[in-house]
Image (tube, rainbow, N blue to C red; front, side, top):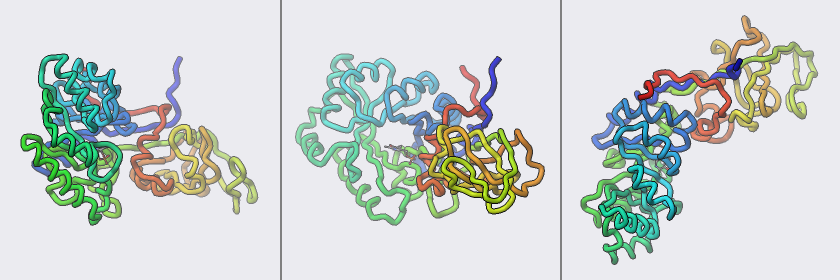
Length: 365
Ligand SMILES: *Cc1c(COP(=O)(O)O)cnc(C)c1O
């Protein structure tokens, strides 16, 4: 006999599809779906086919292994890998029809060699470092490439791309600087299209959306416009099951190291979610659970598998009920603020041992 894990993570795939359609309708170009890191922790095997059914024909992953996972789930759509291609991977890319993002001269050489081996011209995106100093051709590599166009023999550059370092800060001058740099670069590739916007980039001036936008976080309900109202539909709910309830006297310490002490007669609910589930330890004394919309402060240390909440005075609450830890009253962005991080880290840290419920799953073909 098997038992479902006590706490429940609900992932609304219909909301993800609606978010993709809404973002896609904001601009005339194409809109990819970024499904790296297991679709930001939500399950790429569910998210990718859902996006495909919604009309998405361009997918980005970080790693080749992630691309191989979704390749059979998205028909003939373009599957592109953001990270550097390693020497022994080139033949895997061609064998599975996966497109690399080339970010250095050695990678360009590798892909050109692979093209010769298979005897056809191979597509690729070309990434340029316009300010982030992370991935992409450096200024020096760019010079070498412009002086030696033969390096690209056997490769079709479908898009030139770069990544914005301050897209969520709409007034930041680096956005325009990076735009000008990639446009200058693009002039050397008149046939290539342009890709630079992540989620937040789609909320800058319209030109940033360019030919192929690459939203990730916004698809999953994270606010791409921090400080302003979130225009996207929420996707994730987390309900933590109450597995113990106790009444404690004033002066009672709760949890490791007694970092919270009851000041009044209190009712403490112990919930089966902890930092091993991605409910960060730094949320200790900082967050809230909600019962029917009523806030219950997190009290005491978050431990590995358990977290305690002060539910004093909340009527009709019983053992076996659940507290909303993520949902309408506490979004990933809200929880991120309490944990001093961003919504991306909240989502990608969501644990593997929740019971997962998917709304709107596409039947497997
Ligand atoms: C992760 C990533 C994206 C998606 O970014 P979001 O902010 O989640 O929309 C787009 N482009 C690149 C290069 C990335 O690494």
